[in-house]
Image (cartoon, rainbow, N blue to C red; front, side, top):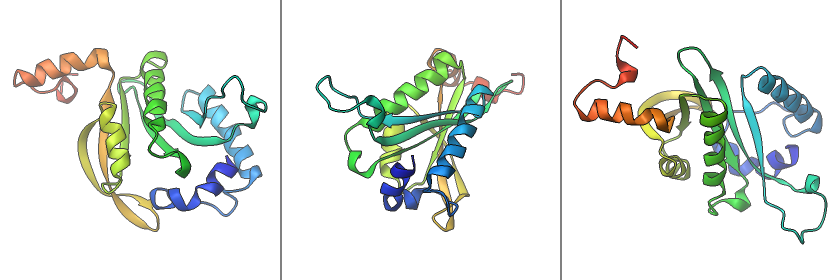
Length: 190
């Protein structure tokens, strides 16, 4: 992880918050990964790393493959909300190959099928056309616009708010709005 973050610091910098001084160190990532395991076991998050598939004739053990991205579910809320926020990044050398779409599709499937969440949310900066495109391809719908939403790259930045509703629940929502009704998620009796 430290290597991934170092390699991509310039590429990811405009899209991420300020990082602590030891962010690129092994000890920092040992602590982070231990915390990620605790969060996973506590049902609070699912943090994944992306690696290229290794072909049968590839050299070296699987553990030597370099990390090319991350796709995380965080801020998991249960109860009446049943939601999580998805966040992701990709190695600068891997952009444009469809890898992030594949990874996010799998993470979203895990959120809906294994975790049985109702909603997965994502936010992106309006100028981040790649994020907008990958989320749209996956079926995320724009829900709003948040001014000064997150402190990113040295300033408060606007974000587009999107979500994807678990597919087997979406048809009832679409039928309700198509008939001119209020979406079920907005009714005060739900």
